[in-house]
Image (cartoon, rainbow, N blue to C red; front, side, top):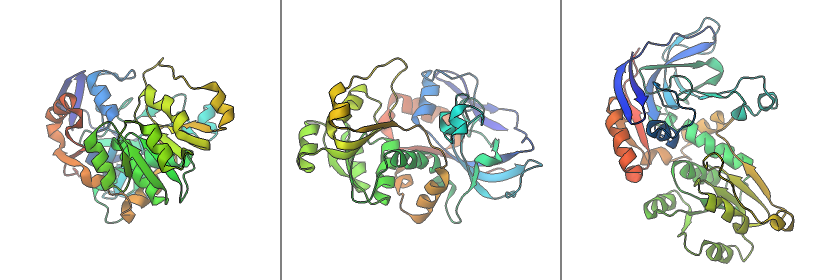
Length: 339
């Protein structure tokens, strides 16, 4: 099959790769759309500590069923589907308590095994979901980032009528805005990039510039702070600021990633003075059905800001994105699925 192959950091080419053969419990998917996320860019730039080259990246995947393993039921060739890329081992403590997204032996399609930047990708049938009727493959490929937004909102227990402060309006931040608003929340968003703030405003968030953020938030919340603060920047300074920005008794959700070994300083007294709840949110678990329902309902408009490219332009697109990360809000590779 044709594939976009990462040979080494900054070395990507279109070439030939052995077509995967589905095991008895797996589904072979002909890829129609595959998104680009920060994780793919980290792999490209050599910043992913788990990267093994050569590899086929791409974990935001939609396509149609090409073939099913002998034990698979419920899928037929031609069915439009999305692939859930995080594979838990099923045996470790996180998996045993239903948190396979935190699996001690986690494998990710597009990182640890070949992903969606190819004609075909295979996945366990348990991690393949039917796309709702009428939903395009491009929109369906957003199920993975939208599911991350669903997970974050579940972790923060975001409720109708609450004010939610979002730090960071990148691709995942935009998903959080729309999922939170679908829950009836009032979202206040900030970012250091003016264009991203404009996009957040188009998605229905009230926006604030980053300067004097604490003062502005206190003014908007009658001096109380935000009931929920979601951090989606990956900045240690932003993470530290969440304690000041959250209301007493409120919740903080940390979505952003810092480098291994980076420590975050927080005022110890505020843990008891504010009795706040601080939770992490990693990828998603059991969130794809809700994400697909939100996409099908029209509550999620995020895919409309995406820029589409032919999959076979990937080497040029990745090089351009490496030079200018903010040149597009979101890139999605498309191709006609091969039978």
